[in-house]
Amino acid sequence: MTSTEFTRNTENFCYRHPDRQSFVLCQRCLRTICPECQTQAAVGVICPECLQEQQRAQTPAQRTAQRRWNRRPSRGGVVAVGGRPVVTYSIIGVTAAVFLLQLLTGNAIDQWLAFYAPWLYPSVSGVFEPWRVLTGALVHSGFWHIGLNMLALWMIGRSLEPLLGRWRFLTLYVVGALGGSVAVALLAFTTPVVGASGAIFALFGALVVIGRHIGAEVTGIMIVLGINLVIGFLPGFGISWQAHVGGLVAGALLGLIYARTRRASQRGWQIALTILLVAVLIGLLALAPVIWV
Ligand SMILES: [Zn+2]
Ligand SMILES: [Zn+2]
Image (cartoon, rainbow, N blue to C red; front, side, top):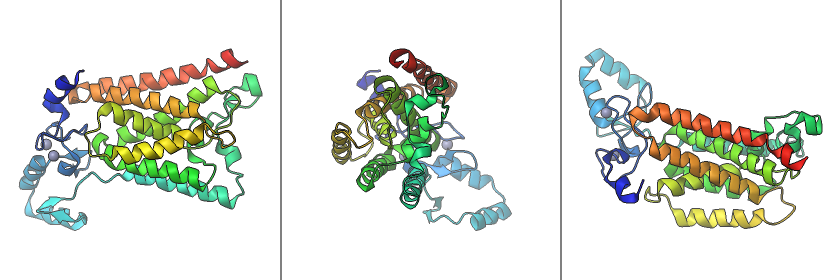
C-alpha cells in the first residue's frame, strides 16, 4: 500500500473527521470512527449517528433506565467517549503489582516468571515452564527499568489503544512479548531475560507501520526507547537487545496485518493472519534447540 493509496482510502479515516486515522468501526453501521466519535455500546462502540438513532427508537421508560445506569459524564447529550486506554492502564497496574511483589518477596517471584529459554524444552533442561514466554514481560530488574518501560507504554498506549481498539491493542502487546522471547531463544538461548521491553518495542513497531500522524508524541517516545535500547546493550541488567528486536519485528508485522485488513469484510482475514503470525512465532521456538544444542 503506497501512502497516497492509503490516504485516498476513506475507510482508513473517521467518516466524521476525514483527517483522523482510525482502526475502529461502528458496530452498527461499520463505518470507521475516531476515538472522539466512539461511544461504548453493549458490544463494541457505536458512532454518534447510530447512537442518536438508537436513542430515538427507545421508549421514554428505556431512556430513563439508560440514564440511571449510565453514570458516565455526558457531553452535549452524547455519552462519553469510548477512547479511554483501559488496557494500557490495566497492564501498567498488573506490572506494577508484580514489581511490588518482587520487592516484598525479595525477588522470589522472578524465579517463577522470568524468561529462560532452556526451560521451554524438557529435552534440553528437563524443565517445562512455557508460561515464561509471556510472564517475563511482567518482571523487571529495578525501579528505572520498570519506570522506563511503563513510561513508554503510557506514552504510546494513550494514542495507540483508542486508535486500534482494546482487543487489537492487547493482542499487540502479548504478541510483542512473545516475539521478544522467541528472538531471545533464537539469538541468546542461555540468557535469562526480564522486562516488558519486547512488548513495548512491538507497540513502537506497530506505531511506525501504522503512521505517525495519530497525535502520538513520537519524539518523547523515541527518547525513552533510545535509553531503553542503549541499556539493553550493557551487560548484567537482564535485558537483551534480542528481545527488543524480536518485539519490534513482531509488532511491525502485526501492525501491517491490522493496517491491511481494517475493513469490516476483512475481519476474518485479520483474525486468521494474527493467528498465523502467532503460530509462526511459536514454530520458530522449535528451532532454538536445533541451533543451540
Ligand atoms: Zn454508526
Ligand atoms: Zn471522528
